[in-house]
Length: 178
Image (cartoon, one colour):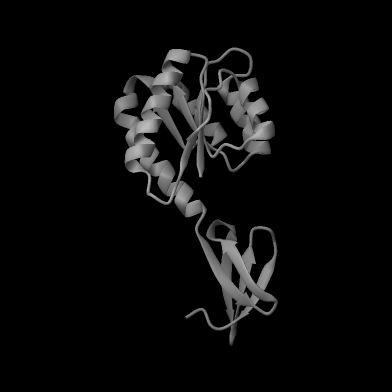
């Protein structure tokens, strides 16, 4: 299941964005993926509180908010929840270059939501599907299932191959890369 969340201090815009995401989930998601849209979060603190008990896969994050602004929140999320896909949403188009520091997946302009949201939605679904692809290996210790995103590289060694992962674990498998 993919969980989408919207953090925006403008309840009207947040409601509009939520409706559009609901529509896109209904029409664009593959059947094997369920979609959940979290209740609208009105501040950075609301997001942090929500994450204490629930998870978020994709966060549509306004930048200009009172208290913790979107950039400060993104900085905290990148450290504590690096798997959350952040999509900045702002009326201030000149924030786009400043947003690069926080490695967002995309930047949506509120004034161009109709044109940009469907493309962004399609791309984020493709990313989430790719991030969750798995492969299984028969190792000397039994079958291992690994997410493709966690594999650094595979090295051939005569009649074996060795799988190196991001967690610095290696798996030795009988067989050749070919």
